[in-house]
Amino acid sequence: MDNWPDHEEILTRCQDWLRQTRSQCDSLDGHAADEQRPDEPVGLYQLVEQFTALRHDMKLLTKATRGTEERNEATLLSLQAAIEQFRGVESKEEEAADKAARPLAEALVELDESLVRCRSVIEQTKHRVLKDVNAELKAGRDRLDELFRTQPWWRRRLCRPWHEAARALFSGHAADTYRNIFDSLLEGHDLIENRLRRTMEQRSIVRIQCLGEQADPHRMTVVEVVSDLTRRPGTVIEEVRPGYCWKRQVLRFAEVKAVGEQ
Image (cartoon, rainbow, N blue to C red; front, side, top):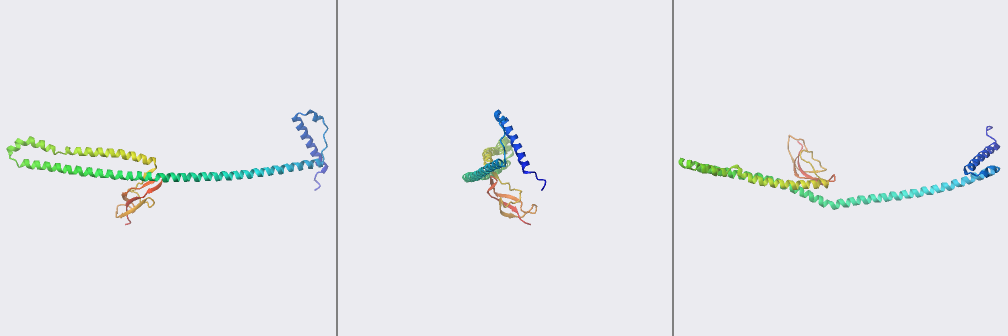
């Protein structure tokens, strides 16, 4: 404790520091008259007075800072509440928009399914009509050949050009007219279907791929289980009714037939 400096020495150092500080401030302010003014004595009382004033200013500054922090916290809480409210409104608006658009999405899905079934019916009708027409043409050629064979040789010789011309009427080229009609119908159907698919892509409607995939209970409903030793259990082998996803959510489950456990 003997190493502590004397009180007088501390006061002397403080006086020197105050003098230097005051001379620097006066030189910066440009007051030449103050430089010639004799220094006022600085004692312990003046030092305590200055520190007391400094302490009072610090208390006021601390109080003001705390008030500012409290106001900032209140403002942050208000902003956070406003942000949460805006987020809630955004989610409600999105939910309301999805609810309003759902009937349109379901209508597009129904239309796509109807077009798929329509194409299947057109192809089946085309195959059946062409098959019936070719069968009738073949039957007509057979009847002409049979009638031609039953005629005398001289009549066959005389009527051979007529027979060949009549037989040409029952050739397979006559079915080309029906084939062209169905091809034109399918071409127009494809244009309508492609336009619908582009609209569905814009609305984020995607058809669920089922054939050859494993049955997914989150997207598919197995309506029938079949036995097939050549395929893995759970493999979808037939799509009874197509399924669709809208905005990565299942809009309608697909109805499929899948391979059962062996």
